[in-house]
Length: 403
Ligand SMILES: *[C@@H]1O[C@H](CO)[C@@H](O)[C@H](O)[C@H]1NC(C)=O
Image 1 (cartoon, helix red, strand yellow):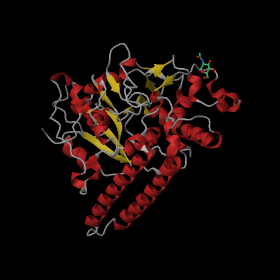
Image 2: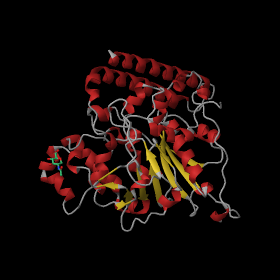
Image 3: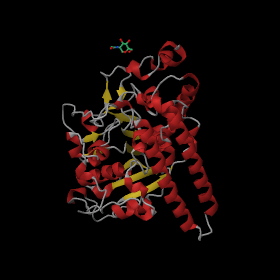
Image 4: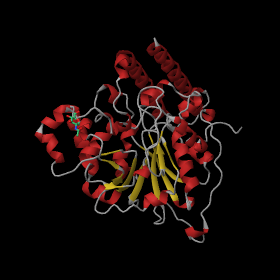
């Protein structure tokens, strides 16, 4: 019964989005340029919608069994089923409404006040990459806001936003006018054929896989980047994370060696020497891919994107894991990760997949709070059933009209 209700809700929300898109499309009709492509996009979205709807109906009973919470970025599905009402607005101009963030400036200690930062290639910049999509927009904006608020030198931070659907550049510009950023388009087709056709993965967003392609997407002059998920806030100066010593490693992340690593892969994987020998001579530990410091120079040189893609192709044929974008990272990097203090990823705050479950912080200091798992603070706050720690996310939320 609740399934049926959810499906109906999904239909209704999707229709609203379609309607909004259609109106948007009509208003653009006067401009001759780009009309063809927007028409095609519209048709593509329409067929995508039907495909998703069919899948929903066919697969809805099997959607109850989600894998462990901290292992997945998020269950996009859950968010789709409860699309926030702001997406239902008919005019794309009021589709999202965010308050303007307060201004920010560098402290005197930053030392660059008399020297203008020249552009994305300026060597004094701290680079942060985050995805932007309509479902997680509120989370992404809160993450950016939190980073700025806790930085001694916020003007030195450059944001690289990866998008696949809506044009969100204007919205970012009007919400945080001073922000230094660039928007990159990630073509979902790049991963469409690599995402396995299993229940969960069919429903996963291609944008979830954009982190595999940062080395290709970002400007070649960007040598290092901090990748962050959209469901977190930073409560410390991100520069401390930026200057992490990676040693000879390509990526840095907090590692969790107490987690049972066996469970991230299937029995078939472990029993097939061709696959399991990849971990020979390594001491692999679980790490969360929602917070990573990446040396893009090394990544490009070795060609890690291809290695990840190769594992995704193997997954398509042999089904060696159950999760989405995480296992290929474990296959390539586990045991070869520069360890970062756990304070930089207090993950799992989204709770597990049991509705209404709240998590507590892990012991120790906290520099970053991560609501990985299916519960998102903005959804819980909106439904008046927040977890205690959601109060730590709320101050960075810019969504809504001023009170
Ligand atoms: C890890 O999990 C596997 C499979 O569930 C189990 O066989 C193994 O004993 C576990 N290892 C530890 C150290 O708990």
